[in-house]
Length: 186
Image: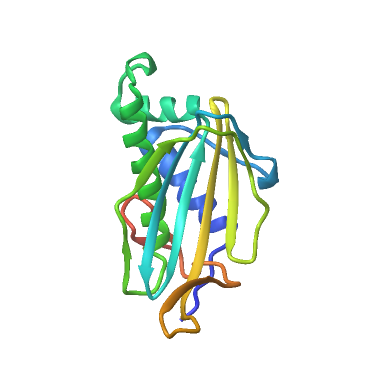
């Protein structure tokens, strides 16, 4: 079963999470390829496997990550430690991936989210044949959400190998999925 995802799905999943959970408004950027973050930005990712196999990745400016962490912890930004920001980044990746997962065919499982402080700068990628990228702007910095879809196909020796395929991931048809509860509404 093939399921479609488009930029609107990612915008809705991301925006609802940021607005409902953090009371922070992010504006989608028209040009994801203009997304750039300095060394020291935070990244988080979650892999999904099952009827759909892929990965959801978020990257955000350090200041945005710390402000989001402070909002989650309901504490001043000055009290946020790097470990707290890494935990919050994992949770942000997990919530956005969970919203996307709720729109995918079953079975579909998620890995435990990962996060890191990146040592090199990163500039956005344009849409590739196996991914979809959406960038967001906030006064505290930029956020990028990228969804990759991979297909597990046998390679020449009969073993399964992950091969990128030309597809995008899930559909907002039939109502919008709420990234917090995973439920749909029309």
